[in-house]
Length: 200
Image (cartoon, rainbow, N blue to C red; front, side, top):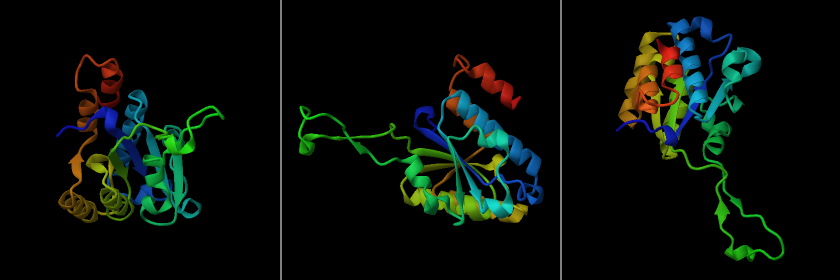
């Protein structure tokens, strides 16, 4: 099964100023998180960010924040407890009309956005906030795709344990380049060169 561009949303978890310096391989983790955000912008994939206790851990870097539709501050480790599911799957609104429109009982709810059920997720710490968010997204019946080279923890052991657990729970594990080329599907895609320039 390949990742479908039209079905995808991107979630970037807690790439925060005071957290990143202690993350194993933090430079490459951050670089890949930013690559994902830039690719998502080029390909019009909705992108969301989260920040754990931002007063204590600081904000995500501005280049990353600026590529997100919204950045959710949170105190819970899972962003699902802080409104992420509502961002990813907005509640349908009833159709609006005037006095001559259909009676309310005949009106159908209109989704705010087409449903995108695949969540591509990356961030820190892989074994805490990313893990808990991804597991709850699976419980909410999203397809979850974890970008391993854009995820980090303070130790490799914790990061790898998170990947093992996520794979066992049904998440797909992939890399930044895998996301890029599965979203593109063809060298004839209009954004192929721009995306390729981000990863090579």
